[in-house]
Length: 295
Image 1 (cartoon, rainbow, N blue to C red):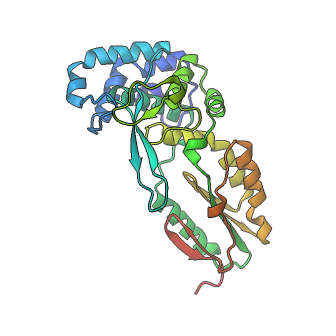
Image 2 (cartoon, helix red, strand yellow):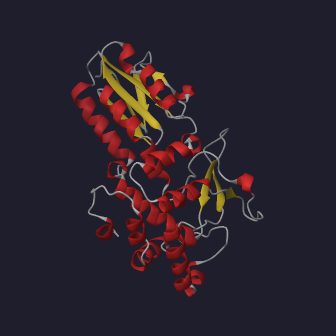
Image 3 (cartoon, helix red, strand yellow):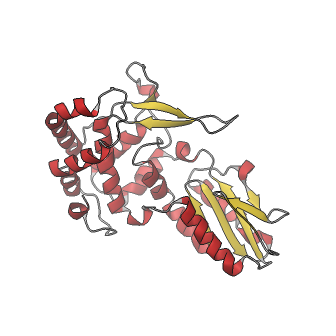
């Protein structure tokens, strides 16, 4: 898919021509080959074997309706994922096989339009970078930190603002309509009747879809640039944020990050916010270290 959508990390503008190219039969087949590796079933219960038996017809529907902007997603199937004792479970959305093909191609287009938002780093990559930073500066008594996370991150991203951000590099109205349908699509429990209009998702990006992470990173791209420019060192993994700065404690940029996050319609989780704690010990993504006075 990379060859026909543009060279890796070469930014494109998503036009109707790019949309048609992305949804040609060869690209649809490639997407199907990828999604068929997982045997997960969506709300319709269709198996890979059953889908394959009607593959040609399914491919025709995908191509025609996605290019026209008339494609509709089946309701996502709800899967509850525990987050630990006393915490509400995370709602994971599972798409049907046909919808997963469409979402996979949408993701490829988004990655080409926003190459700087493609994050292939794992948590241990962040830990390694912080460790390297601390090998140089960890004993500096003027170093302070600010650690927080975004409250209900995926669930609170405003749809209109997200679509506007994507539209800065996507002039195809059919693509934008397709994307909007994918994030407004309701997530229902197994056995539910056809979703009602009021069930449609009014805010947030459904979790568990192939497009979830890239959309979240696209929405926060300007936020990340701003904070990285203000801080000595800035890290964000999904909704977990840690900032390092040199100087008095106010240099942790607490007010800056609060203003920035509020300006994009999100909220910080104050119960998980720490600014230069008394023992100066911090933890991030399972990594623990201490500011200054290390033995």
